[in-house]
Length: 400
Image 1 (cartoon, one colour):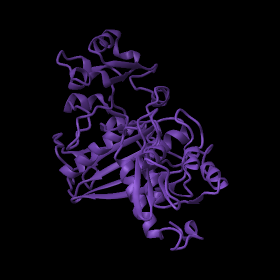
Image 2 (cartoon, helix red, strand yellow):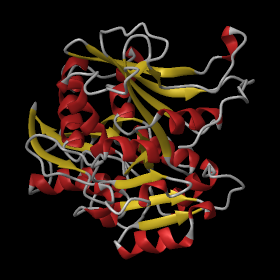
Image 3 (cartoon, one colour):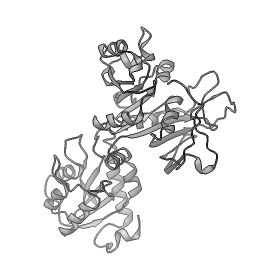
Image 4 (cartoon, one colour):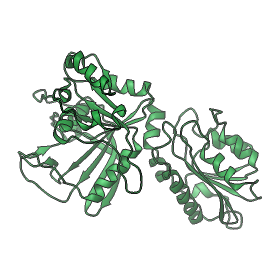
């Protein structure tokens, strides 16, 4: 937070910067408390503070419900006292929508000071809420824990600025970039704490995707399993252009378990209508995209997700699917977990292939990077940035 954000705020009139951050951290905790439940809306936390004490709290309700600011003001039970401050992690909305503009509710409440974390990422609305509040005589302080408040809504931020889903990848590798031994053994490269963090992110993303080989090899459930919370199933996408996952009479778990209606097989006409009917008979959804090969066109998949209001998809492999996404410039974000071990074996399974950069500037990079540690394992995550010239190795070819 820059000093300019709190100019004109004296210790006698408002909390000092450290107190702003303390209360904003609590607002962030409230927002995290509704983790993954508000799509396609952002997660927002808000609280009302009087004389240094929190007297009202709120977090965004599921889609169609009240916003955090309204809930915080309602939880106060009566009009805030003179001098009360509203803390909110995201700029209050200024459009009517289904629940009314939060700026109107704040003005009507009599609040005279609002402290905000992040600015609305929507270019059509960014800063407008601040202008409306200031025009009503309300003091507005911005940029408190701005980076944390912005990062909280990385799925929503992409959705609202790009008009489509955030396609993120998750990889778990050794320090030399291997995801399995030459024998195929891969459980477990990362430790329990890192794997628990993966389940936390699974709960955030509306969809999880894997390729056919991952289904055939590992038979995963593709659900979010977190301690103290019920198992939860996002939309479970299986990329299978030839419907190889349906060939065996013993179908994988994602086609037969209690969440099978949350499974969507993404395929092409090359898979065969008989297998499509078999999946649908089991309650599994099928998205078929026209393609001259068995490869699903990712741009078409992205558009379909946008039509279905699926704001984000985390791709968890396998290597072929992840590499194809990179080659097609369709991977937007990457979660890369690294374990402190080396295989030092050129025949061990790697995660990415299919490019042939000839210069350093031809590399794919991450920007806006965040680092986290999990008992020795490390997570590097960030936005994928492609070079102007992405050199493809045309000799690399394989089936998902």
